[in-house]
Amino acid sequence: MLTLVLLGFFAAIFSAYSSVLAQGSVPAVTSYANDFVDPAYILEKSFPSSTHLANETIIQWAGELAAAGPWSVTSKPIAPPSGNKHDYLSWAPYLWPNCTAVGNHTALTPEQIWTTCPYITRDGLFNPDTVNLIPDNEAFQNMSDAVWFNSMAWVLTGDNQYSANAAKFINTWFLDPATAMNPNLNYAQVHRGPGVQNGSHTGLLDLKCMVKVVNAVLILRDGKSSDWTTQLDTAFVTWGNKYIPWLETNVLAIAEEDADNNHGTFFYNQLAAVQILVGNLTGAKLTLETYFTKQYLKQINSNGEQPLEAIRTRPYHYRAYNLAAMITNARLAHYLNYPVWNLTTSSGATIQTAANFAMTVVPFQNESSWSTLEELNPCVAAVAAVYGDPHGTYAAFLKKIEPAYPVEPYFLWNQPLSDLGYVSHVGGGSSNSSSDARAKSTGTSMQGRLGRGVGGVVGVFVSVSLLL
Image (tube, rainbow, N blue to C red; front, top):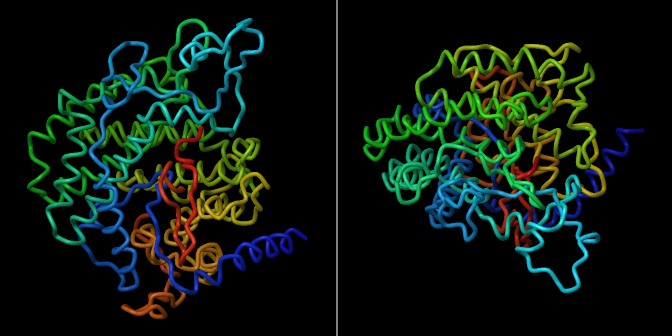
């Protein structure tokens, strides 16, 4: 019965888009929840010919992202409670004001609402002023994607403009005294309302994509980019060495580290990445060992369900979200020669088990959009590349959700993975039809940006990389 429901659901969505997809697909900039690419794989440039369309997308996205930069925490119009705009600031996204018992006789100004009205949680429902008024969260997301894709575009093209972009954006966000972010998240996802307003432990999630920034630095470092100077590298390592103690000792960070769901998973992404940045590889490995012997053990049931994500208001999204974080931890572990892909949870499940289950689930009605379905695709591609896809099951899933999936950047680094003949069909390269060998290693549109443009159809999607 479930199979029939799934087939009907996916068939309905696919038929709605098939006619425009046939005209060709031009991917718009998309922010993957998180990921890490082996720098050696990028720098060796020994890619299957079927990945050349993904390469072109990376170059296109790098340029589009760079055109919007640079970004800085000092650009926000509202100062955090510290009064220092160098401190990162965001407001808790699912908290909404309840002014019914305030007793006001005239309309409250926004500033009065922020400090007078109690705020209540509406899980999964974004309060728009958290993005519209305080840009730090979106700015960091944009910056991390710009740095990540520009570092890869530098390797793919040999054009130093891309490496210069990446270096400039890192310098502006982290290092330039006039614009730099202080190494703390004391005011991330602040709970507004009466009384003292401080950050919350969930705010650690805002900087989860430090992984992408560190990944970019490793590519620039190992590729000996002339734009990534010794001075910049030393300064960024210094910044990281100040941030790590905050991550390891601050009460907000400790609470996030103890979280059993995706929050904990992403915390370990971030801490391990910064430890890698500063050269503390032993510490990074210990960080990942803690995750895989602690939270991971309880995150996947024997059938592949992620119980702590399934209870949320948008479980399809949260399964994909935590899966992306688990995969990122596994990729970081692989980089450190710590094999984890076949580690099992207490119920005997692996990351592959979780992906297999997620592929069978129909999104709830409140989250059944094309963009939501695509969230799972980078995870499915990773699992196919790592565990193998001898029967083409994973490739077929990708094609069903997104017929032009070989155009996506993730197709470049999730190899081997079949393109199911797509590249040869559209021209300009040969297909990589073999996908059963094991790989050595192994999102959603950004707020305010155009979503996937298919033929003449353009959608505007809400970012879920900002979600809890």
